[in-house]
Length: 195
Image (cartoon, rainbow, N blue to C red; front, side, top):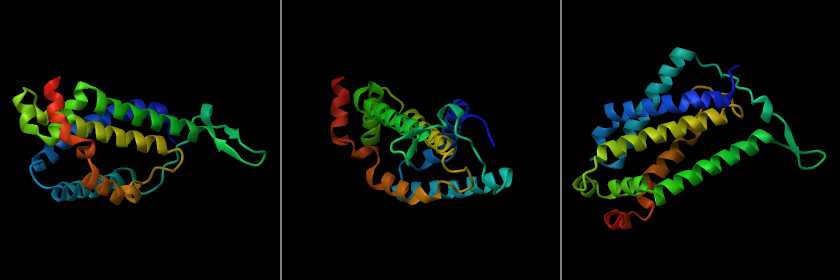
């Protein structure tokens, strides 16, 4: 089995961020002016390529990743039923990350820039900001978050090639129908100008 999951986070998140920035620069940035479908198709193609590379390098066998010893106990809810402490920690981490993302997107200057760049990149460029850098950072941050989710889930489900396939279609639906533009994007340009 592999080492501590939280040590893996320390190494995995920065590596995933750099990897995401590289992928955005090599592939994704060329499709920003095209429709969502082409971006989704490219993303799906990249997933297939990386899954094949992963299998060629590490093989098809699941990798066992233990729950950290300090979180391996259970909280006894009834005499017969205990809830794993690691799952409680996992829920707390996920809620903290979701809350931090909401605060950043809604209440910071960086969040206002990101929202404005999504709805009106030309206006953001006119204000002196490079929307391409913003998009690259957001994409890389998304890759880092996905890596963090995979690492944190690995003690519950063994890591194996194609582990994310079950949520793939749901993720595409969220990106195409929802996306960052659904967070009151009409107000962002005027909001940015006022700040």
